Image 1 (cartoon, rainbow, N blue to C red):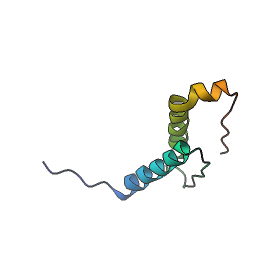
Image 2: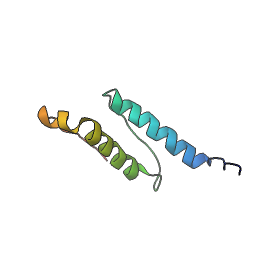
Image 3: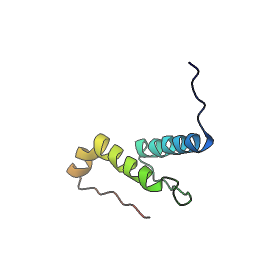
Image 4: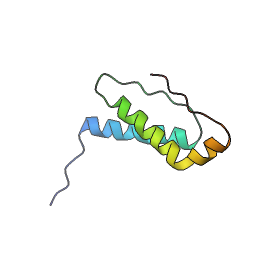
Length: 70
């Protein structure tokens, strides 16, 4: 069975998440700009989930916090 091609919107969303995750993994800030309904809240939730999963204990131990501006 042939695999379906990824539509342009899904491809752009996937690339944006990958870039955002790279920033998080490198300890850098990032800005995500997109139109209404493009998945910004979803991306923010994924970013927070990733930080908690990978660095939550470290952040708590150091008394650090995460800032989100929407």
